[in-house]
Amino acid sequence: MQTTDFICHPTDWLDWAREHQAALLGPVAIVGDMGAGKTTAVKHWLQALGSPDAGSSPTFTLIQPYDSPLGVIYHADFYRLEDVAEAETLGLDEIFDSGQPMWMEWPQKITNLLPEEMAVLRIDVQADGCRKVTLETKS
Image (cartoon, rainbow, N blue to C red; front, side):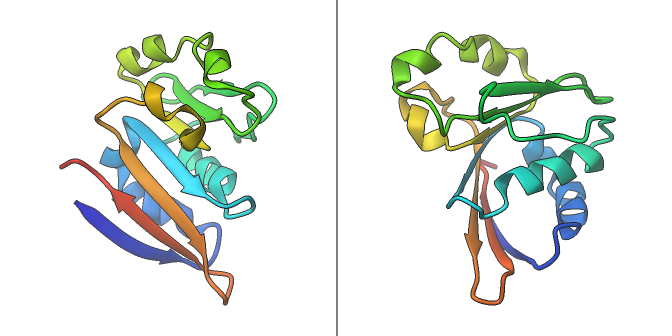
């Protein structure tokens, strides 16, 4: 199933996350150009799901765990990965097998390690600054 929405203010991500909460509870590949708002979206998703953590870009830590009423939420940023071998040492299988949410920026860096069942979110910046948000889910 595919849905398309437009986000014109960062806080609009709160309502979007509440509406699409089911998709956010598993692995989510977040695709978009640099500056598209991937980390901004994650910060608001955390808030919408009741996390006390503000969220930040895990560019240098690669994977950041956050607390939430749902348990741990993982946020990964694979932008700085040199190669897939580096990703293989991160314990991704264990995270995917945990059943906890795993939100991944720059998933195209690890395509052969991604689970088959995951949501894909594409963020495209529009001329007016709004974001076109396309969510693809298996169900």
